[in-house]
Length: 460
Image (tube, rainbow, N blue to C red; front, top):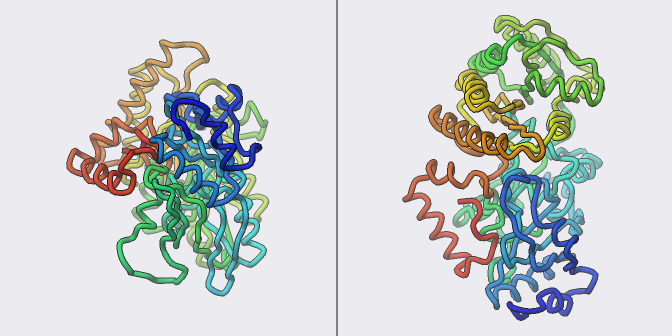
């Protein structure tokens, strides 16, 4: 492959011609993820990999000529982690969707990285198994992308994030060599945990092409929902802190503020509460009297924190109805204009204070901020909205974005809970990690990718 000339033509010589795109409109469509405010460049070519060998062939050719490679799943990321860099090749794994193996006895599955999260969950459910990680984009995001960013989700407050379910993987390294990391056993302590290192590395250390994922039994849970409407964000935050202090571990504890409620209701007409500053949505999935008692305790704590009203449900359809507003919040806000998405995570006890600080930032910087949150684990998503084409509002939004990151760190938090650093969080990550730890990151990167061709400039 010649670095200066017809990269797409050379790639067609390695793969089938229909696996390579190089038309301007096609390249632009694959140039960035959903973080529209993060910088990106038009790539030289887009490759649709059909197998691990395809990925390896492209990476080997790129490595030979020092051409950057950016791996991409469904492009649903919100930090710019899949954005093309100048002169790069984008490798899309969206066609790698095979469910290779399900072992119901050992409770794991082997799957290609391009399979959609929800399709995988449905497939393993047919075997009586459950894959817990459920990012808000679970209907459209890929498992490989989830692993690259260590995605969380609504139920991670109790069941953990993607890294907790990745037993092993197949990875294409920066020289095009294929390695298999991890295990298929319930336990394992051989060598460094390179599998965990790859999860959350945002494609900077290797390209994940297959995953071995731990599964849980599907049955044995009776889900109950408790939803409280609050007159203030601080009151909802106080309820979150009280539930945590009481030692209750809900399977979900989500918050959506007044602006989100209004945007969803104007779009979908769900009859959501008017006049409430926030909804706090909780589920418990313990069996029988234990679950009923936990739901009653959560309802009581919400009342003590000032809930204006509480609704409960135990039937699956009713539980889904109560949580529908949370699932629709982000797309509803996107209809109002470009959204700059935060992904901070603070200690659970700091949730009330952080919600107050977000309100102060919105007033100080004259920006519109809506907030949704995985409140049960302190992962807040302030969503800063600027009207299309309003450059002054966009500049104010960026100032507000940085202030929120600073406030989060002041409270002992971290700049990203589940979206990854990508490009948007690089300044905050630098401060959070510190120079010595950044040097450790650079050393690991240099050891695995000495020519810096894998997703350069991202993650740290």
